[in-house]
Image (tube, rainbow, N blue to C red; front, side, top):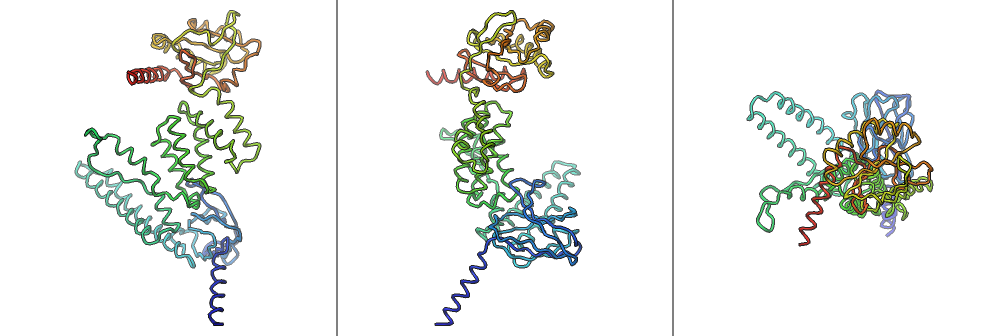
Length: 479
């Protein structure tokens, strides 16, 4: 009975010790001494974006110990020497206690691990990748030298076999070691395999969108959103980039829906949620796609203003909210804020008084180099096609250069536009229309609803055509 109790206590102590937070990594270098070494990790992006976590001095014998008792989020970590003579990656999990011996000049091939079976597997995989890369490079060279169509096809067939070999290697690890970090990394790297063959719609016609729809709907199937360690790999940012820039339709409703779905998946995972919310918000704010500023406003109103951006201090959070409040009044679909301006000959002029099927609202400055190039091109587009589509131009001068303004209009014969300014500085147009750069161009419909923004002379006509096609489709659908 005593021995049973003693064995139980020893087992308890052993389990408790192995479950300790932090890490201990003993390093032994054969060719690196008397200098510092750093422990770094990825944060969603590939090299060179890494974050240093810890450091230690390598003694005269080439030995250093990196250790912490703080809970550590696992992932792919990097040993980086101070002189940047080389580096190598390895897998780290909270509670790991391992030893690594390496020759810095020949890393990662020389890195050997003790006390970490998973790093043995990772090291074996990295060695395999070196050989895989050489064989793939040989195929690329053969492809350049291919002389016939048959030669080219034969090389493509070999490439397919090589790709299947790599996939089978990863699948073997996934099957044998479920739930491990390396398995979840391999699964996160997977892409959906679209079923071959002809795919039909209910009416018997071929579904030409099947491959796209299947790939998109299964894109995240293998990514484990419950594993926050995946943020410390160079995978997530690339997947977000491909998903939102190549697979999600670039319309506000679709983007907002997909963002909500991903945030729902990551909810409860501190780092994955944080990165997803930050990434989508910044993507929307910086996007050159018309209308994505509405997504930015949506993200701020539905997440940042509701306390989900937990990592931001009050000052930074306020900047997001202030920016969203400035953008919100002029997003596509809103009624354009009224403008009470003065014409070039001193008469009052309201934006709402412009009687046109479409109003092109142009904010520009005569001393702006881009404006000096863009205004004549807009006028050419107006005379060539826009005027016939029912467009009128309401052009607002930004700044105080009155004589230069008048001279420019006269020189370029912009006499069919309505030219206005705000000499008494009574209008709040810069805030209402987010005019912090020129030219800034909006397209309004006959009810003065904003239908386009961030436009230039090259795409105004295209936006109008899209609007008219949509209007025609809605009319036909209503019949």
